[in-house]
Length: 143
Image 1 (cartoon, helix red, strand yellow):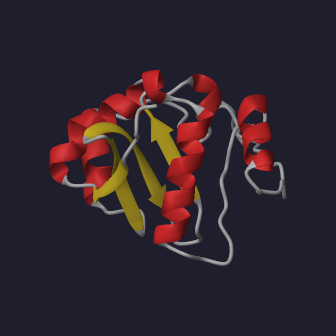
Image 2 (cartoon, helix red, strand yellow):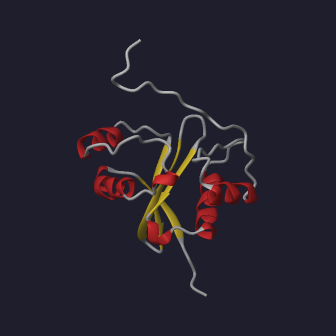
């Protein structure tokens, strides 16, 4: 059996293209934070703003396979390139991240239609605490 080594390296400006490609290729059912794809310049500004407390490029046997972050309120975001997306690997990444940054509570936001991810999180010790609803007015609607 192949030994899989997972490591984290801090996100740097040299990772902009990789992170943008990850964002472009993210599956629609995984996406809850973006309504539309940002331009590369918007993406660059976002990355340079250092929006997360911890943000890493995930290395599997020294190859970049995704990114993971923790927000100020201990939300975890995980995005893997599609051909490496498997639950065993995701579990290992989450376990390593939570071991590296021990907290009493972590949150993960997912699309409620993503049944595979919901079951994965339940089986990984996470509990469902809320569904969040959003109402937005159409741009052409007036008050």
